[in-house]
Image (cartoon, rainbow, N blue to C red; front, top):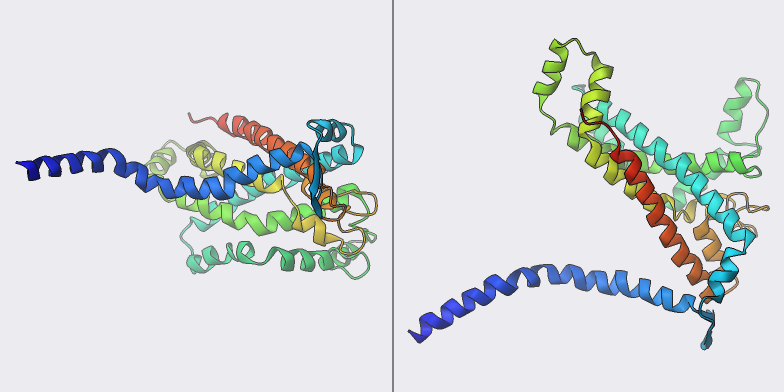
Length: 306
């Protein structure tokens, strides 16, 4: 009888506590690599702290945030960040939808094409940026050569705000569109063919079926990819840093024309060693990312499902 009682008690404990044990590794990893760095960054942002002299740190509370709100370079970087977010996120989603629709058709060697769209994503971001910086070169760049064929003059892509944003956006869109396209493709294959057959009988053409059946049914995936793209594009660092290597790399050009918030954080923290001020930039950037991601969620949620 005692053995049965122990077995029943053990079964109850297993049923009650085993689920917590299964999810515990995630929370442990999140606590170490997610929550702790976030809380530590907030704590450091309240200090006047040099990266090389951490022992001499003093608490200044919200002085870093007050200085940040009055910093024109920070607002310039935030403006560049929002501009690049708009130029990268929207084209990524639209191009990914079109590519997924094309890959979803029954064509020869479609498996090869599906594998090909993911290749840019697994390519080193440093290699991609260096190559595209050469393609957008002022004197010997491929894009200027193509524009010259149509009689257009040479463009100094790095010198202008709009041109540099376009060049960086092309790099990001080229690298990440295939990743989103595969997500959409997997979801498209789960849509019942009977919906398209019924729409065909009702006289709907391919474009109408795409916008009135496929896109509304992909709303959860569009919301997911929009949030993923937003969190990535709001913290662009490698692309603007390597787009103009040299003395002005950390400033995002000679006039800070393509310096993002993440790049400004890098400049303050790792070239000027102002660890406290750079941490305050990180906190504000994280809050801005959540706000922009929420805005993107509300916009994509309004996609009609009728």
